[in-house]
Length: 144
Image 1 (cartoon, rainbow, N blue to C red):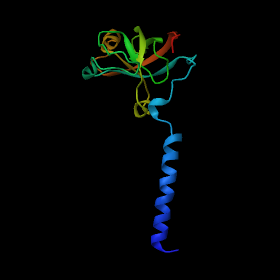
Image 2 (cartoon, helix red, strand yellow; image 1 turned 180 degrees about the vertical axis):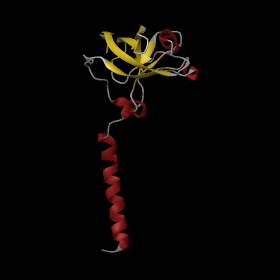
Image 3 (cartoon, rainbow, N blue to C red; image 1 turned 90 degrees about the vertical axis):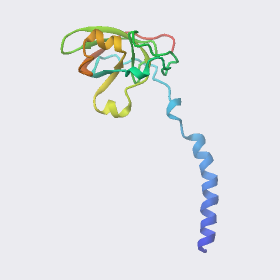
Image 4 (cartoon, helix red, strand yellow; image 1 turned 180 degrees about the horizontal axis):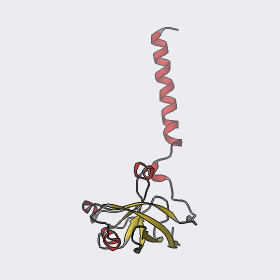
């Protein structure tokens, strides 16, 4: 076999494989959230949404409103209500999950939830930017 025939063979093989690979490779945005809600409490870091996110659509389709008691969680179904307790002070707030987050990089660093500004103000950690929290599911969503 010559170099040019090997090159033509490689191009032909790539043309056949690529469309098939695209059909069977799932998109990240297509992966649904799990049906089951974690039964145990979760602990880790919490942070809050940046101001520039105000008014933008979240993963659930709702618009983010900084004054609402809402949050982003990587796996809990949209509409799930979660009690977020600041471990340092014992203050707590109940938020509703409307978005996905924190991202993979943040989860590896121990972040478990992103809160709205109103929730961060309720827990009194806006100046620090992050705080250690415990999450307890109050009410799981029935519509997802």
